[in-house]
Image 1: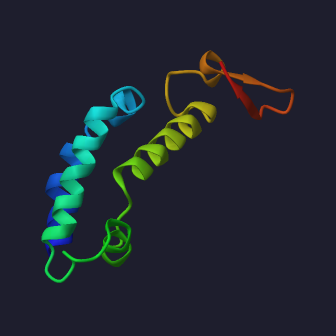
Image 2 (image 1 turned 90 degrees about the vertical axis):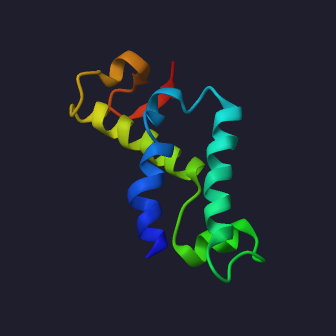
Amino acid sequence: MMVNFYKSFVRPHLEQCVSVWSRHYLKDKELLERVQRRFTRMTEGFSSLPYAERLLMLRLLTLEERRHRYGLIEVFKMFYGYTEIEVRVLFTLDGNDRVYAAI
């Protein structure tokens, strides 16, 4: 039940506007990850386990992994026209419309 509570009420606040700031502020990333570490440590029976193992057992990803996932989703949306930002603004495409280099 606590994992569902965390996913529903806490994690959305930790990930707010992540696609805008995620590449720039290392200290903020570490602070946010510390919140998730603390939550997993507070879960009954998990306090003595390493962070990676706690995440596996709770079926969670690190916030860094989730930020990478959001970035890939944004590129996908740009590439297929689901956003107003065109993929050609940020990437150079080859003749097959495949992304091969970031500008």
